[in-house]
Amino acid sequence: MSSYELYRRSSLGVALTDTLDELITDGHIDPQTAMKVLSQFDSSFADALHSKVRSKATIKGHLHIYRLCDDVWTFIVERPTFRFENETVVADKVKVVACKASTAS
Image 1 (cartoon, rainbow, N blue to C red):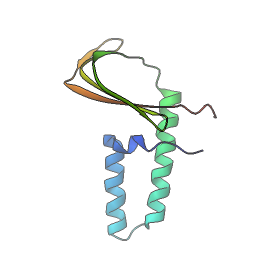
Image 2 (cartoon, one colour; image 1 turned 90 degrees about the vertical axis):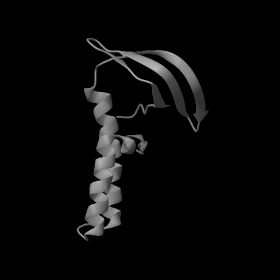
Image 3 (cartoon, rainbow, N blue to C red; image 1 turned 120 degrees about the vertical axis):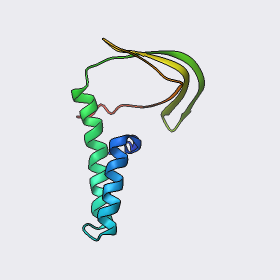
């Protein structure tokens, strides 16, 4: 099963990529191993979000841009307000990327 590479742009994904780059540069691992680690990261991140996260949020704001390309929706929301169970978070602008979920387990 293939996974999206979306989570590589998260702070955790960037830290992993930087660490793998350093390990390759220092000669501790080869690039093929690093690619396998990143592929496993993509799969594990998606699985963890699907099976472990039960929180829901409501987003309100001004939809500035939206697009659909290759079954991936991208929304740019200005002045969004995120309402969680016990918290409200406000931002200037947020990018939301939504992909079709796999139904295979």
